[in-house]
Length: 96
Image (cartoon, rainbow, N blue to C red; front, side, top):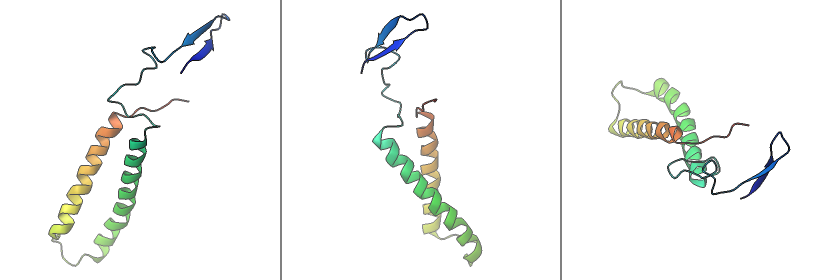
């Protein structure tokens, strides 16, 4: 990828992939990364499920004791959201 940019003085300089500014870091997830897209989609689906599940459980839960299944499911959701926080800390974004 070579881009030619023109400075304000009218001089042209070329930026290449070898430039440290344009070299992608290995531990950063970029917005165009397919894995990042799938992860964000997965978390979005979990958010929708959680938004539907919480009011349902509050309205129709017969006892205050949660079942083992519901407790394990809630722990799984909480762990996934914690991992998502870590993923977002290592995600790049573009300023337009």
